[in-house]
Amino acid sequence: MVVWTDQERAYIQDIFSKLNYEDTGPKAFIYCMVLVVYPWTQRYFGGFGNLYSAEAIKSNPMVAAHGTVVLHGLDKAMKNMDDIKNAYADLSVLHSEKLHVDPDNFRLLADCLTIVIAATMGSSFTANVQAAWQKFIAVVVSALSRQYH
Image (cartoon, rainbow, N blue to C red; front, side, top):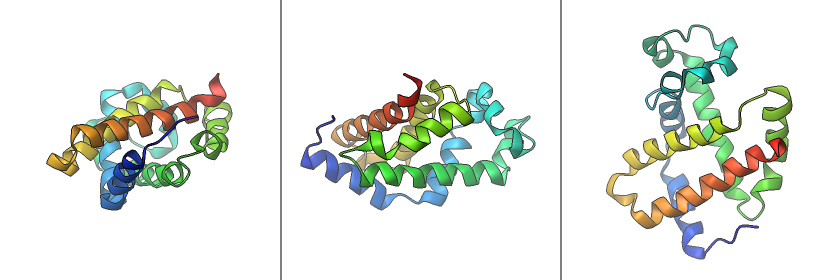
């Protein structure tokens, strides 16, 4: 079980209160280029159409929409910080048994989200905020990877 300080909870809630989901989520997939920098991740998005170039990925509305969905999905973790593992149990099963997503890809996306959030928040993404965010996102990645263990 993860123990959260009141300050960590406040930092995480503050990050989410400032996020523009329709901007930040797509940027994690598009501008941070998860699908470009880590091209093997494209195999999970076969139904998204043309992903053959960076330009095609940037202009793909399905990629942007999925980024928004993922970011909204993190709300569930924020609202269930005391039990993220169980809150994400169904998602872990889905990604493991149906989608067959390599669990290391969760970490790659987490890194991209961190970069985009840090760039968006600028100087307010202090060392303490970053530490709380990275603790939070590490717990999310662990919860999503749970089914694989």
